Image 1: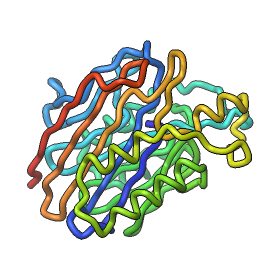
Image 2: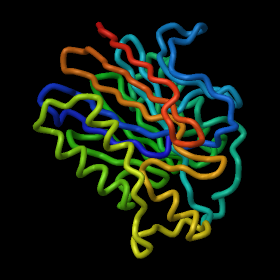
Image 3: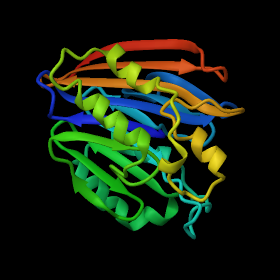
Length: 255
């Protein structure tokens, strides 16, 4: 994932609201969201190149999502990890560990992964972790995560959080969240972060919905979990022209 907006225990009906865009090369082989044949309790898309997923839920209410970290100014900015970051999502969803225990157990193997941000929830707690070893329980609130640390004030994160916050007192529906994700407005030059890439590319990547030659927003995902446990999961897939090609939606009643 390259943009995750979420509200935790801040909406009157929904314990968790997630609106996320996955930005990736169009040529990378990917399976759309489905219940996995080898792990039927997991609902997620699947990376067919290196394994794992970028975002998923389970039938018992677990949630996980990952973003990469874009910082070519750092020494490790371009060093690939030997393990796919998508396995972090898969491993959490396939485990029974509490979020804090999972992140603590991960500390000894952080060096095997390229820089990442990770969100994990068991339905009772929501935690944020990253490749720097941070492990933090998130309190009720609205959060934004892109290709830097949680709540780093990039324009699309700031504006996306405000758009999500504006929905906190309304009868929020999936389409409201998809509308937030669909914004293709780019940031002003003066607002662009410096992650060590060409400023022209930085500007293209500043939009919530990205469309470039060979790379862009390939799917948008909405997760809505009520306090009673019901999960609404909806995913929209897009082609290289930014046109919707697939729309998957389901409901899960967790224990």
